Length: 162
Length: 162
DNA sequence: TTTGAAAACGATAATGATTATCGATTAGTG
DNA sequence: CACTAATCGATAATCATTATCGTTTTCAAA
Ligand SMILES: [Mn+2]
Ligand SMILES: [Mn+2]
Ligand SMILES: [Zn+2]
Ligand SMILES: [Zn+2]
Image 1 (cartoon, rainbow over the protein chains, first blue to last red):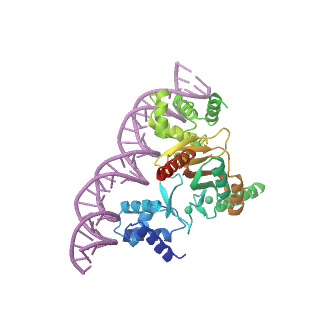
Image 2 (image 1 turned 60 degrees about the vertical axis):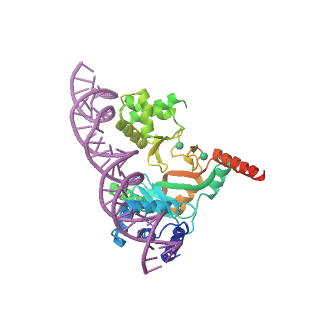
Image 3 (image 1 turned 135 degrees about the vertical axis):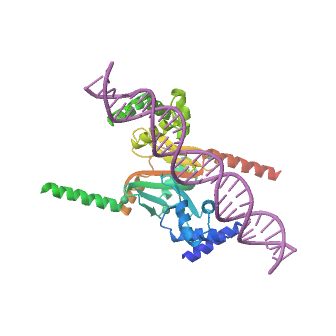
């Protein structure tokens, strides 16, 4: 689905719950759609949205993100640095996607595929817990940092042999 | 392993990294061991530790928890309320355990069994990501709240039929 | 269209968790 | 026992988020 279409869809969701369609909300959603790959903090969103709607206030951004979170359009996530980050749900997804956080370069990347289906079946059965959503984050070393480390250790070896 | 033994073990870890063994650190670890089931915030720990060491300062509690986190004795976790919580690692575990958070009563319970072994193998292979740790939390309805809901809906039915 | 009420807004003060600072105290080595 | 780096307690500073409040805007009914 194109950005245009998704915007229309989100507008309908707002409208159907009788929330008003303000230019501030529209600009905020636009920023989220245009930066889907990223994991923006409220401050990040604020700075980006100011380009489209310079008069917007930070409080409004917080309010809008809170609203979008309640409507399950975005997920509010926390990677342990002191800020909340807002993550647009994937097209049609009814749950939060997974993340890979590199402990060396800080890069955050996505896993869109749902890896928890089996695990969740087990948890529902054995722990008698009715699952509505999940949060799964892996902490480790990303591909790029692994490659970098391998190159450096190879260099060291070579130098050692000379 | 008994609390006593685990305390000794943690003391050894501190000592081996040339951290000093202060009464404040000992009292803090004691509180964590005695409240292993809970997910205490720094403030929670502070209040509990004051019973053992009334002169302790809040800053020291934060410092100690930070230290224990670096030593991988506790995990710093975040359930989306505004505070960090500190969770003692299970006996001998080298990674964070999983959690079940009830969206109705707020109860948090543990899953000690590691459910991610297979998933992690797949992620390491297919995403080329070297996993060091993980965070997995399920949000849903706990057993107690399910039962409560079932009883209430049954009552309603019965009343409706009268 | 005009209009009125509820919703939303911007500015900014307040809050609350966490961190930084600094002078005083203490653990641990010898 | 003496020394010194580590640690501590008190508290000020920081920083993200929320609350407040007077003004503006949306939207639906007239
Ligand atoms: Mn994401
Ligand atoms: Mn736990
Ligand atoms: Zn990396
Ligand atoms: Zn519950």
